[in-house]
Image (cartoon, rainbow, N blue to C red):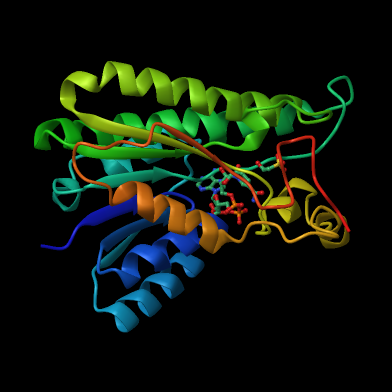
Length: 251
Ligand code: NDP
Ligand code: 8X3
């Protein structure tokens, strides 16, 4: 029987690439995000190309009511195998004393509270089934805090912490929890971070080959397809030109 995965932030970047990766292998999908037009276009293409079931759910992960309304009491989620908490963003790259409070709130509400809400809404289905896999997308930004990264780095440090906590607290339910921490990858991430300034965003990836969204999708697919008794707990991945948040080789 086909397996089923729910991916947040599937309208772009890692989430979209992950949707394609799992669809190609015959998984059925639930893809989520705020941009309904994009999700519809992706769902149509995947259903036509791979003859799988794709349903979309449009909600803002920051909005607790929307999350629980979208994800509670849904028979389509009763046989869900895996969840990818990918929706997230950085906003601004500013010194702590100069940073914008609204940017901070949005990052905390999306990267941390959004991940908590979605997981809290999905875990009851996993508990009922006696299995399930939560995969959380952190970042190298949560491994080494860098200048002007302050609150973004804090949210991603929290992704590792809460992943560890979930793994401990849900051990008795045999739910797998994996945290994946990618380094620099060229998606819409930097365009969002620099609020539409595409030239500025481009400079982030100058002079080296960053990760591609497909690289992260491949890694998520690997983690999701290990034997029942195997769980990758935490995984850091970078492009070959990056050693960590601080060391990046640009030509
Ligand atoms: P993109 O900007 O390309 O994609 C982000 C996705 O998150 C979009 O699908 C967006 O959908 C969704 N999203 C953002 N805010 C919300 C929200 N409030 N509610 C619902 N969905 C939301 O970035 P990436 O694919 O690069 O980023 C994906 C994840 O990977 C993020 O958590 C990011 O922090 C992390 N990451 C990125 C790295 C990089 O270098 N690119 C490296 C390490 C980690 P929509 O706008 O339609 O809601
Ligand atoms: C995104 C990677 O280095 O821009 O999480 O923070 S970085």
